[in-house]
Length: 112
Image 1 (tube, rainbow, N blue to C red):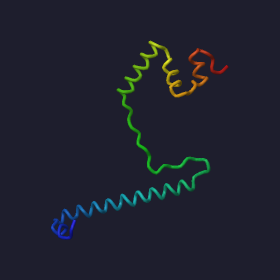
Image 2: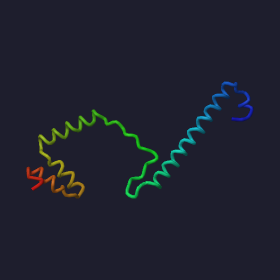
Image 3: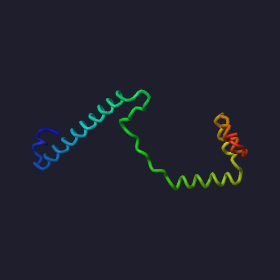
Image 4: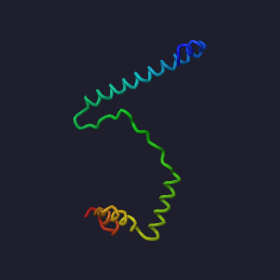
């Protein structure tokens, strides 16, 4: 925006521009303050405690319809073929099924 363009604006439009600029300055200084506070808190944290994240990841709501459909498919697979699909997943990933899972599958006792 050139000087001539700015001079052509009305006082109300100039006030809106100044207000937006002020809001940007406040937002930037708030972000800087939060970053400094976070850094100080992380430096002064106890020895084995976790770092405090500056930007927390928002949790997304689960897709209930998708989950219900997946659960229905899994239950249908278990009715028709048992839990062999779990063994196939482990085999595809070149892993062995955990021992406690085998005991549950065979109906054994976990604790004894």
